[in-house]
Image 1 (cartoon, rainbow, N blue to C red):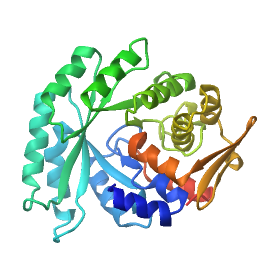
Image 2 (cartoon, one colour):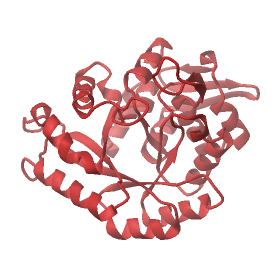
Image 3 (tube, one colour):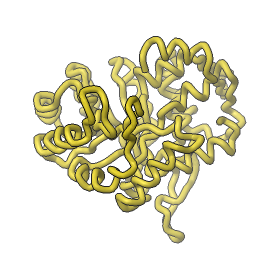
Image 4 (cartoon, rainbow, N blue to C red):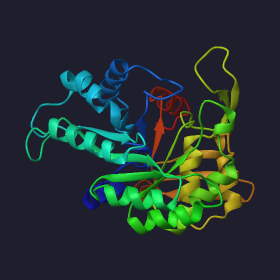
Length: 316
């Protein structure tokens, strides 16, 4: 978002608009949805054109599947001059050089002219298990490609985030999966958010975030699926904002565990959270800063669930 656009938003848009604008990166190819490429491409086109399209972020696609995406998406991509292209985030295969070659070929294929394209990979998501991995990723990856490096919340978290911050890259947190053991403890999420805030390190979170509030949900879409406690994407966003405003880890932890919709209230100019210690207020400015420089997006295998459930709660 440009400074001029951000300033206009702060003056004219509701707090919910600032918080949810282009928030949800659509990962329908991934579990638990695990839909086919033709279905996911059609879904993305449909969501872009719908009334909640302003909440849609990037299409998440494995770098190795970009060619297949092109085959399915070509008839649907924008062709008019000045049209907004589909933006994609490519996920890593384990071979950074191969991924980058796929990304470069994709972007060249979809370039209409110097300034126009129907689709563009402008983000890359890749895992790192060591400081050496981070150094290799940084050395290989162009700095005009926004790169999110996924790290584990373990005893090496802070050194790993120090290294990511030193490169100017971004961090990524996995917040769930299709088994209960894939979900980190709430304290681990707070630790990650605190460490990113301390380093002014932008980040994204992905997996297990397709509901706005925490609760016990089915871990997959099978009728007989096991259940587990999932995080809610709204408390995760607000916890990041609260930490950035100087809130304590204990308060951020309580916020993550807030499942009562009555405790979180939206107004045009702010969002408030009522808790045992009082009321925390998140202004338009604070929410905009979270989305620009804090927790900038979430990945979700569903777009309709976060939208429909947020609407049902009266937030949209």
